[in-house]
Length: 219
Image (tube, rainbow, N blue to C red; front, side, top):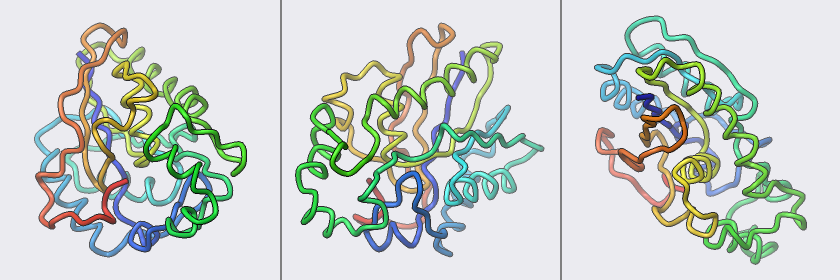
């Protein structure tokens, strides 16, 4: 049995402002995010992890390294380019309200109808393209595992939602059926057959956070 713990990065300034960051935009973690990483580490501390994998974007990499500092043992941290957030093209850096005004069809499909999402106009990345670049990372982790390992993967809200649901076999049209993922949440899945199938253990777990969530925490 290989168990995978998917963590969305800590909350950033652009999250607070309601801006899309995407694969190329970025902003620093809020000071409060380190308290939330403390909360997450306290929750995960009893578990032995073989490795932490992270997106190279600073908001994810900073979260991964801060989490590693707070967990026992010397857990190797692997930075993998394929774990970046969606390339959102022209929407990156824009506030949600501006995106809704300029690209209403793209925004609606991205958030509510992923099977209909066509990013051509915004020069972005489609759901199938994102899944095709991210799934191999998970397949490689599981393939090199001996069936008893536990791993942390730190990445991004929209990307992780698509990736995890694809691993669970969820049709593209239903990828949003469980809602989004909150900053510093952990979503856990496992495979008992070397990656042939995956089972969801917990979606968007934030019970360990010491602060109440608001609408800017989840995407």
